[in-house]
Image 1: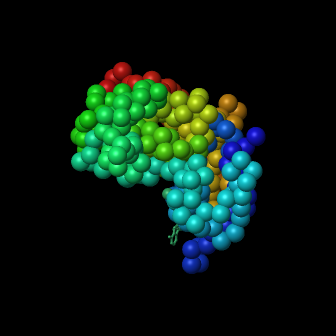
Image 2: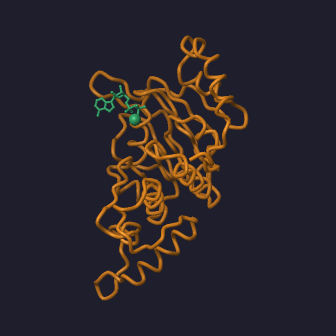
Image 3: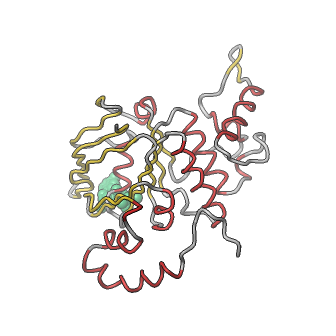
Length: 267
Ligand SMILES: Nc1ncnc2c1ncn2[C@@H]1O[C@H](COP(=O)(O)OP(=O)(O)O)[C@@H](O)[C@H]1O
Ligand SMILES: [Mg+2]
């Protein structure tokens, strides 16, 4: 039974066909790795799914019911949460406030800080996110910790489908592993995740299926257990280009056969 389904989504910007009929069903607790070269249409698809951009045509359903999203607020109400690349955290505010941002628990019309801190601690603990104190301003935390807090907020604010745009791109190996582990924990809780990534190793480590886009269409869908980095890179590049680099990628992927979920020991 699919949670989120979209059918024949199309979007044109001026003369550019950003999406040329894209369809997919995403299951409960399924992790989709969304890959593709720059300009393939990944961001446009994510923006449509989170209500930030309206498609020219096509349908989106959640639990089988049609969604007509006019804004990200509509998507959030339907259980679709997005974590943008800039994370939208308020650096000066503490961890607890950032987890609840805009939905702080109140008591007699003022923010109930004790309750907020207690609940924030619980939310982070449930997701095995280790932060020294929920009283710390998020501005001083590492990139990986910040990413995890933004994801925790998305889940806490009702995200049953969480959209992540390059969550590991700006992080070092240890922090990347933390974020990847968090994605697998979300899956274990039944949350569905769509994660845009350029890193084949990361996608193969956490995704159930890899969806490769090219020029506004889905070029191929692979079960991670029935594919390889070479196969996925081939889909991303297209026939001619992949032919030329297949030897290089084979050499490169066997040389870097490390598990990205394991923190690197050399660091
Ligand atoms: N707001 C926009 N206005 C005009 N063209 C856009 C806009 N957003 C995306 N595009 C174009 O649509 C195509 C797909 O872009 P995008 O979805 O950002 O791809 P990706 O995220 O895979 O790199 C590109 O050719 C891009 O230039
Ligand atoms: Mg993009």
